[in-house]
Length: 473
Image (cartoon, rainbow, N blue to C red):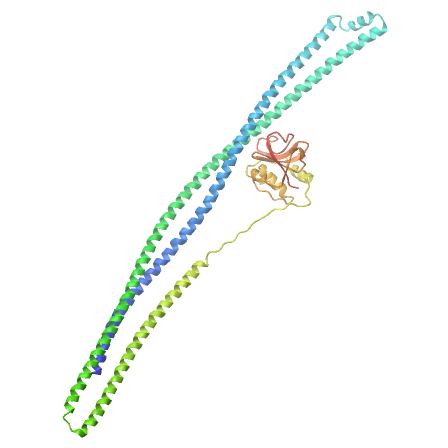
């Protein structure tokens, strides 16, 4: 009986083991596929993060280019106003020159008429005749003095008118030069505007491409997530099947134990009926034997039930250990993921040297007069633009400035043009210069050829609208 019971239990265990073995193999395959899918999902998410970072950086560049473009457009408008003002000043100067030339010509004609009159009245002998016709010595001297005064007046008036004409002519030349510089600056900024617009168009196209790549990557990530959900569902189904098989095996084992107990009880009852016909003397002994057999059977059944409960307990413990290991692996993965996110930032500041003086700055800057103008350049010898020139000059004295005429307007402290001192920074729309004193500036101008272009000294600091005067030392 016991062998038969062991055989039934063994068959049940083998059947359960086969089901569990098949489920475990399938579970391992799904877990391996899930691990691969998770790795692919992580790679796609990493790609999305990189694309998002690149897109954000590109967006910042686009915003900065937009600001630069707005500033360039504003500077072009200011330059147009300055050019219009210069044209008006040039027209006024031409009118003044016309009047000065007419006055000069009129004075010259009058003087010629007086000289012609003297010569028509006798030439050189007219002086002698004038002296002989005088009534007295004092009259003669008065006439001579009057004649000399008239001559001096004509000469002085003519010289003054010539000087006026020359001054007006020089002013017209200066205004024409300043207008040419403004026009050159306008052409340069219009070129910058076109370049910025082209760069912006390219950047926006690249940003659009980033958005397309991110959209495709997000779609792929969604597919991987769906696949992982399907794999999790399959794993859960396998776990449920394994649990159902274990429960069925346990139930079958319990049924087998129950039937074996019933059969043992029946056999014991049949044996009891056959022994009742024996003598009264042997009855007590038979009863004792029956009690011993019953006790042994009960002990064996208890032992079998304890073994069954022990096996079931060990199986449950293994499931808990596997579950604990899975949770530990998941927590470890989360820890690894969160440890990757960190960032740092740094800043910089600039300071000026205490030994710098305004005149020292001017003396240093004028050493480079005559060197070429190069747009975007920062070399005091090989070429620089206006803000590159001022940046390098002040850098020599430990004063840090950005390579931008617009940005340099926010450095130092503001003073009025009336308070300007040598070494101050004169800020215009789209241009900067170093004040030398006496209305003069030293700066890098984009007009060419030298002395119109290059690093040069200009005698009129207010040749265009001054936006700000900044004191840096």
